[in-house]
Image 1 (cartoon, rainbow, N blue to C red):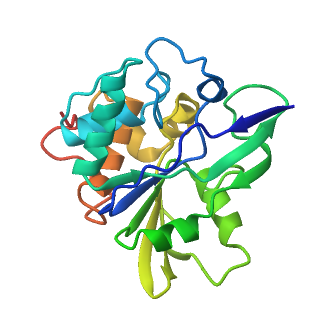
Image 2: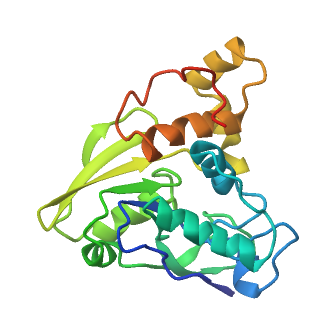
Image 3: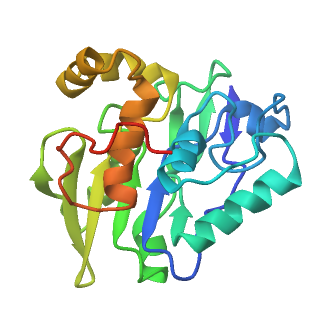
Amino acid sequence: MFRHQHPYPPFIPENATKLIVGTLPPPRFSQGKRKEGDVDFCYGSRDGQLWKILERVYGVNLIFDDCEEAVQQRKSFLIENKLGICDMVEACEREKIDASDLGMKNVELRNMTKILKKHPSVKYLFFTGGNSKNGPEYFFRRHIKNTAVNLKVVSNDIPRIHQFVLDGRLINTVSLTAPSGSANRAVGGMEFYKTMKKKHPDFTTLDFRVWQYKKFFLEPWKNYNSEPTGGYRFY
């Protein structure tokens, strides 16, 4: 049995208003066996899309290489944009050493509510995945199960939106489409994606995520189900 320990502590700037919440990086990041093109930081897998999405959403140019400059660039970007990253999982065990969420066993969760209390400026949690088993929303629900915190549905459309009150403070959550290749099949089945693909044959699953993420990272709660305007590519 392999113990998969999260290699990075939460990165939350003092004035962060939004937290990106996932599970944990692939095992190779905990083993010090990064691949060429990986970045030694949260969501640093060369196979992941989060930083590619944020690069286009915010109109920045990021380095995708295993170097310290790429790490510092991402930290500066998060600080400048009042973004934090705090995954739900501190550690788990795996029989098979892979990045599958379903393969996680004996999961140890981070105390998200305690972390939120330490960062009173945070107003939004952006789950990089939904409520499927061992997804970030799933683990958050498990974390608050025996507490006074209750998730209230704001919208059951994709992406699902909830809100909850913590010590009198309203916090909103959005379960974004996962920035991983494994979610591409689900994206391909969404009516909005099909519609956009018919209108624009070169519309990709990455374009879809850029459209979706932009609505919440830059313009929370504003017309999140409307079509992109002024072209669908957000460069």
